[in-house]
Amino acid sequence: MKDTQIPTDKSPFLETEASGHLRSLLRSILGSVPDAMIVIDENGVILAFSHAAERLFGYRAENVTGRNVSMLMTASDRDHHDRYMDNYMKTGEKQIIGIGRIVQARRANGESFPVELKIGEARLHGRRLFTGYLRDLTEQQANAHRISEMQAELANFSRLSAVGTMASAMAHELNQPLTAVANYLEAARDLLETPDPETLGLVTDALNAATTQSVRAGQIVRRLRDYVSRGELELRPVDLRAVIAEAVSLAKIGLEGRLARVIERLDTDLPQVLADKIQLRQVLLNLVKNAIEALQDTENPQICIQAECQGKDRVRLTIRDNGPGFDLTEGHDPFNPFHSSKPGGMGLGLSICQTIIEAHGGRIDLLSEPDQGAAFQIVIDAAPGGPPA
Ligand code: ADP
Image (tube, rainbow, N blue to C red; front, side):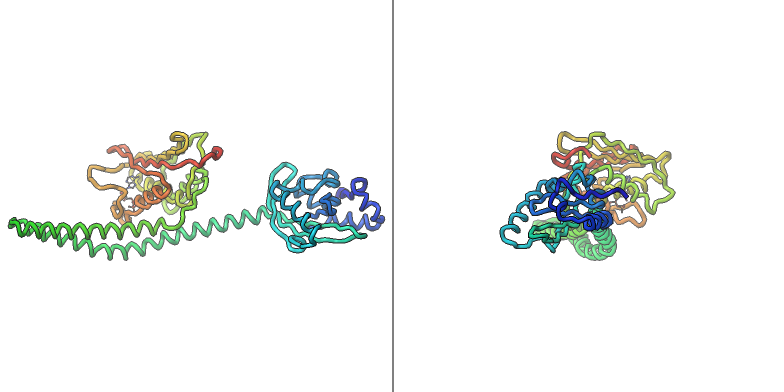
């Protein structure tokens, strides 16, 4: 073990006080204390710097002793520290001493990182010494962050699985207005067999009633969509590459064996997008999963995911496959719910994608030529002023 620096010329205070014994005791403490330990005087001058502190900050003890402790702090914590010290010296009021708090520290390479700081005070021959114990919280904070992300994901997944249950309840609820619409229309048709001014009035009434009922059905569907994409959108700068990679690997779960080649064409200077990462991933997951399923009978199945800048502050994302595509001549809007060609499908996926993208202030369109495969195009905001992802 290398010799720990015990301040001498830079801190005559310790030098004059420390007997040989005391010095070797201090040296062994500084070398073995597991947490980073820093001793400063009442002016903030560093008197001692433990081995663990050297490892944590990337400084050698001899390069920091005699200098002000503020060199180990980020700008904002430096101001706080000066104020705490001033206040403590004037009033004796303990704001951190013996309590501990979380601060941002600064390594020799300029990187800032969170630490838990606990401070103890000692008096030696009428002078005050402060000992700071620091514990690196980088990993702990990263874990806490990951856990909260996972909790959010879990909440999202359980909401989606609840949709299955809810959909059957909704189907039941929808049945009523739809039956009423059918009845009113049938009545109107029958009435039109004997068209006279009186029956025409009744026809108008029946058609009005049918309209009211179909609006009600629309509201029920909207409620379901809102439920699925409910919750505050947490819009943050998001790295699209990472979201695409996660969505593609999630989409393949449960679809083993149906191999589609996924080609990514992402602009090199692609900016981050402003999005709720989990919701955006859900959209891409739905689209890629749909594409994989649509490609089951296609030879040489391929999905191309392309992302490029659109103007200065938008990003365009296209998910294209070489499958059967959509027959739009059938006249129904694929984003309308409850249209599914799959045996177990609910026909809600595309409708949910649309709700989520519109909640982001973006838009999603289907570009599909017959026999040309399907292509979904999404346009959303780039994160303002952010560096390229
Ligand atoms: P679901 O997957 O439950 O059917 P969606 O709303 O996601 O619900 O999709 C609705 C329908 O749109 C699907 O059943 C399928 O017929 C069609 N579809 C979706 N994506 C594609 C695609 N990439 N290619 C061809 N058809 C698609």
